[in-house]
Length: 237
Ligand code: 5GP
Image (cartoon, rainbow, N blue to C red; front, side, top):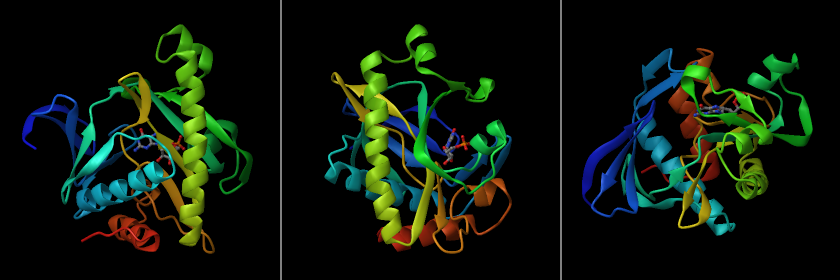
């Protein structure tokens, strides 16, 4: 597959067109960022770890019946995906309180959420990705009523599959973010699933093994990602 022009460059990935108009190449870079891009760094091996981690998770989800954009690994830090028409929304499920939900509602980190909560956020950095509800999504045309239902259903299904997978590696899947896009009339899971977009804790010590290590200057960021990968059985080489 020929890598063509750059279509889009985000904070940690660059997207390229290919000679097939229905396929894109995702390049996972070593760049990392937090707080709307105000804190940035380059972390050795991160692009490769995240590319392989994402491939592993997407394949597990496909095996569980979740339709994703993932096609195949192209190189250590690149993957081939279907070209989706992305919805400008982030879907967040939380099993344990952490991050913005604690700040927003004055809740202590670490409390079990029963039921697991679901939130939509608008993908808009200048607006700091605000929380939005289903009426906003419909009124502003960011997704249809059917797509809203599907996004919730698929995200909760992903939560079921991955909570079990992480539990088998003695880890808690605290929360995660998904993004969806349209492809030939269907809604597919797009973007990525890596420790950049989820929270993962050791189930006994509750040690943080995700991007919070970068956000909070805890160090050992990529080492933690590699630890999660190892516990899940992700082949990194
Ligand atoms: P929070 O709302 O607590 O900041 O984030 C909830 C979950 O979604 C966390 O696992 C966080 O990593 C992920 N998340 C939320 N927004 C973004 C984003 O813009 N980019 C990435 N990579 N992950 C996000």
